Image 1 (cartoon, rainbow, N blue to C red):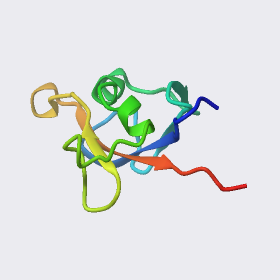
Image 2 (image 1 turned 90 degrees about the horizontal axis):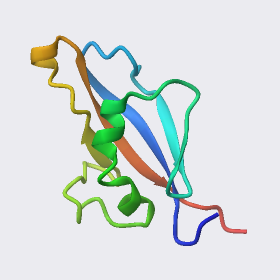
Image 3 (image 1 turned 180 degrees about the vertical axis):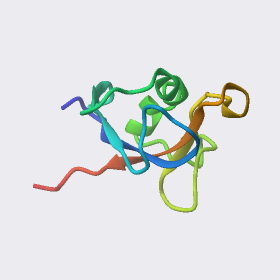
Length: 103
């Protein structure tokens, strides 16, 4: 594993409108700061929303410092689909660091 990186779990927390990709509660991983791991297709809108923040979050930057803090210790972002206009859906994602188990 790359030094100073923690894996992230990204979960679809809320869906407004109709998202043709994500289901509520679905999750994917970002491992070692750059490896996307998922058992299903990932929407490009989601990746674009996540891309400015994933590296900082995997390095341990507090979501509060990035302006992404929610009511818990997770970071929150929203996909870029303007669903009110496109008729699609927008997803709010929760991003959490996966702490390593101590050996």
